[in-house]
Structure formats: C-alpha cells, structure tokens
Image 1 (cartoon, one colour):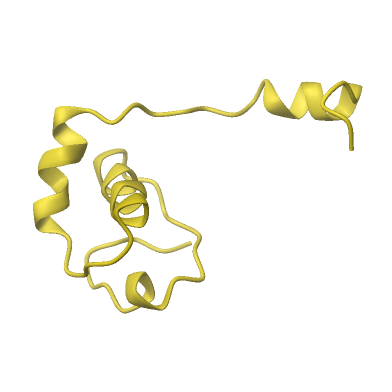
Image 2: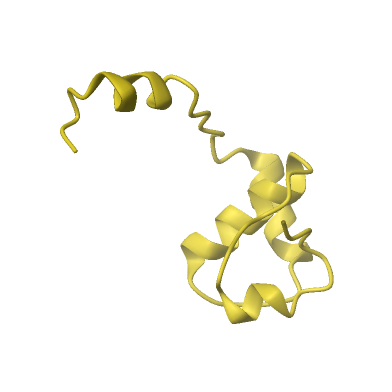
Length: 69
C-alpha cells in the first residue's frame, strides 16, 4: 500500500503519539520486567496514560503491573 493511498492517509490522521516524558521515564522504575528498552518505554507509556497494551512479548505478558488488552 502506498503512503499516498487515501484510506491510509485517513487512518494515519487518527494515530496519536505520546512523547517520552519525565513521568514515563520515572514509571520505568515501576516495571516488573526487563527487556528491550523500547518495549519498556512502550509499557511505561501505557501505564502513564492508563491504556491497555496489546503485545506478543512474553516478558510483558508475565507482568502484574502492565494492563494488557
């Protein structure tokens, strides 16, 4: 699919990107798993914004802190 595809253009308008904030960085210390730093940032961001995380990552699935979708 081309990035100029009208359907894709409309879908991308709905994407929200949360920044890596101080609050997200502080939340990293509360995670009960370690792994890929990017996965940790994504999990911490989901905690800060109270948004369930959809993932296949086994480490995150074992977490008792991260809300999973």
